[in-house]
Length: 302
Image (cartoon, rainbow, N blue to C red; front, side):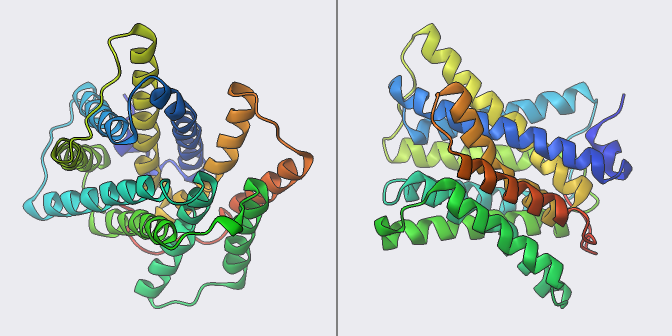
């Protein structure tokens, strides 16, 4: 049976497909979130369910693959550290939604691919190539127009929270990509998910924000779907970091806002203009051009 651990040498094509599938799954989870809130829950509780389901999915995968949950003390500490950072980034993004439009918060969050490449360039002491710079400028430019962000609604706390979320995600990508090159990816992901679940439970119950969905079948199905799509998506994302590296995974993840718009069109029946289709194509072109660039020289983690 082929496992994620065996896929490390399968080439970039498999890694890109896995991350693209993960992106669709995460986007679907985002589309389901408003439905969860409409059924009586809140962002804090949904985040707990998401991370808890993430931990269960990882644990089930390890059991299916007969993979022992064994890490050195060093790797365990790095897993916990990266897990706390990623969990904090999720919290910062949720806080940003209270101050600025969701579209603007997502746009700022998706500075993390550029921050990931910049951080790795600094650590490698190398200057990014002009082709890299062009791709990294094209993707956010397309997102600005595609999302029709209203910059008249800027708010300092919201901008700070969203920026911290982007920095947190980039830090988590770089951390796992460099500090866990030999650890099995599903084991490290499982440990990160468990860490995140514990931190979120403590925060949610400590602030009195726990609000599970009502005992209704439809509400339960929506919550389960939102949690499962999140869990499957992020398992694929971290597997992608292992296979194609942190920077390439981050660049493919730029597809998430575009995929979310398309899913909103299909599921929520929102309108999508011709200009938005054009700018979405610009984002996709920039991402796939970036895949042709030389991969980073660092170890590929998680």
